[in-house]
Amino acid sequence: MNVLAQADPILDPNIEPEIWWFALSPLLVLVGGALTLMLIGALTPKWPKGLYALASAMVAGAAGTLAIFNWDDISDNGPTTLVAGALAFDTFAMWSTVTICAAVILVSMLTDEFIRNTPNDGPEVYSLYLVAATGGIVMASANDLIVLFLGLETLSLALYVLAASNRRSDASAESGLKYFILGGFASSLFLYGIALVYGATGSTNIGEMVNAVAVRLDGDNDALALAGIALLIVGLGFKVAAAPFHIWVPDVYQGAPSPVTAFMASAGKVAAFGAIIRVLVSGLPAYRDDWQPIIWVLALLSLVVGSFLAVVQTNVKRMLAYSSVSHAGFLLVGVEAAAHFAGEAYPGMGISSVQLYLLFYSVLVIGSFGVVAVVVGDDDASLDRFKGLAKRKPLVAIAFTIFLLAQAGVPFTTGFIAKFGVIQAAVEVDSYAIAIIAMVTAVVAAFLYLRIMVSMWLHDEDEKAPAVRVPFAAGLAIGAAALFSVVFGIFPSWFIDWSDAITLVR
Image (spheres, rainbow, N blue to C red):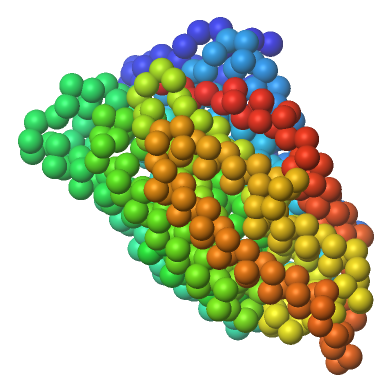
């Protein structure tokens, strides 16, 4: 079925927009799966163990598979827009869809045993994963700022509830409240930025915005647009956990249930960076000389703050939280590289390197927090809890070591491929300073990962530490993530070729 038979009509109040259902099928499957899971779960007795997680993973798998089919259609016919220009239908959107769906599959497997025999054991958490995934995909696919905001709020509201979902933990409730308050503040700034950009350009549609600013605006509207861009960057900077907008990250990551933290760190970043590229690189290329230095500074701050503050932490979840800030810095290095080609026919390596990084990092961070969930459960994730883990559970320690080495960027892991890609993109555009800073901070951050590995492999086992039990589904997810990180770190060509084919609708 050819879903690209003709271009979408421009929105006309007297003409209903044509809707290509197959092109929208990944979103429809996720929404339908979330609603069906909630409805049937509420009307039927408690399902057998593991069935809620299996249903969630199957829905996400079906959506990801449909996205791959859509990728083939786009490759054959070229990118376009859907629903009268509201959504972009391009390989960039499909890559983000597949990455987010993969995150839902892995996190669902981790969550199964984590919430079993607790008040949260039911379909609600899994439905929220699917709803959040829907919002994230809309963010990465949005071709209109209002649609992007709707996706952002759908994702954010689901994550607020998920962060506070552990009703037995005061820390979880606190993390949800902090995330809600600070996230609401960031969303309001983002919405105000949309209003200012609309006032300057006369449209919230990204394609029409490009046309409006192509001839450059007059003085007053130009200042209005720049103020709006600044607010948009602040709002999105919060969502990607870039310094100095990262203040929510350590407390929220520490207090939220570990599987939820894994989902925030993976799917949340994919959605937020998708939105940054849509808004800045695709929608505001005429202002790249204005917003590119801001991205450069945010990348610098994120790299330095994330790396140096991570090494002084004693809680593993807080270590990984500050590590995620550092990874956001690496991703911003790729965005900064993409800025040099914004609006030009040749896209450069920036966008493809960011998307490749997001895929590889999502698997790594889910595996890392999966190990944390298995080892400490709901308890405090202090570094002492990981002492002697290699003697208690050698396979778990090996998997965690793979994840830590990959996050450090050690060769023959996906983390090395990801970091090499964004640094190569920076070198391509002669951004040598930020590339060197990124490499130096990677060395600093390596000390953080070394501390955890030393605790696992060289310290004596704590006799008072509770036994570590690895549930089948969680063990399968962790093992799959570790295998992925090694295999595609050694043989990455397939994913590199796939990422090189990423296109943005213009």
